[in-house]
Image (tube, rainbow, N blue to C red; front, side, top):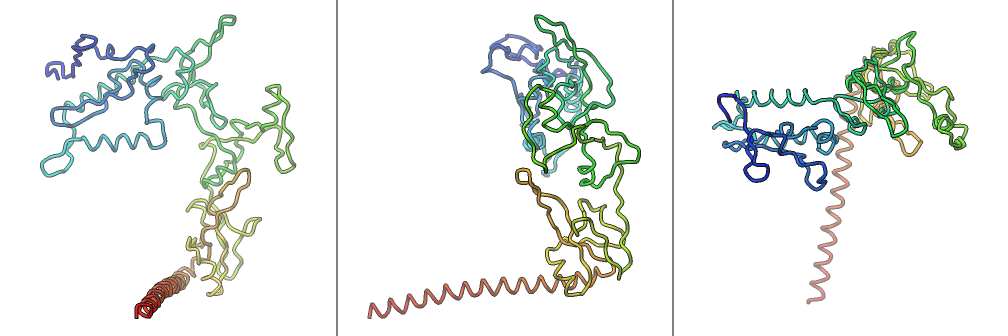
Length: 359
């Protein structure tokens, strides 16, 4: 660490024979067996930090794709591991970062932000900053379409260029049904941002023969309309009538409660599996609550989690549920007591037989 420049100076006296040239430590691309994926720096106080961004030329375009950061919860796992190498005081409490650490963090963040735009089409795939329209998934859309550059996609016979967009402008679209399962509904007079073509229509556009669809699998040839989150609003279900009136149900005889905000006013959702039984004992109406779906192949099965009753009967329901839970626990204990007594009986009979044989 140079106290005058407030920077760390990498020195390599073995291979590159360089001083303060971190990019020279990056292995050449022609050597596939030697890649710089992680660079962990250890200090004299046994603390460690990930400084890969300092020693790589294309961290976001190439290196980041080979790290654990892009896997599900991979970034959390790596941060958790590095937390084990953070400095702790004498009392074992983790201390705050020093001035050197803050300066180094700013330097690494500045180097990552100043990384130039990739010049290769393949490097744009899964890039954290830039995106191409060709790499979008079916449910993704660019909005607003603010072009930040061009990249050449020409071949030996054609001269073409593609527009480059910011990754933060790439959003996920969902159908009205999918938004409803997240507790949201489409606002009035909103037009779809994109239409998801069915498989047969996509095959026709690609010049292939579409596979025949059954009557249940036929889709609108115009495609399913997709909407952005800003085109939706929180779904407010109609309130439940006062006690004594029937609770409204959907076409399948149950109630959709995908989120907590979808519980109707004057209603109470009890997720306990004995809710319907307890409501029957009380003589009050209970409607099964659908909280999701489980899919096996192309078939979906509704997940029933408890039921919805009137809020006025909540205290009585919880008392009955407590009693049913105690009865279930007693039955479970009685079952295990019978199993244990059976094992003891078998052992005692074996000891009697052994005594007779021995006598």
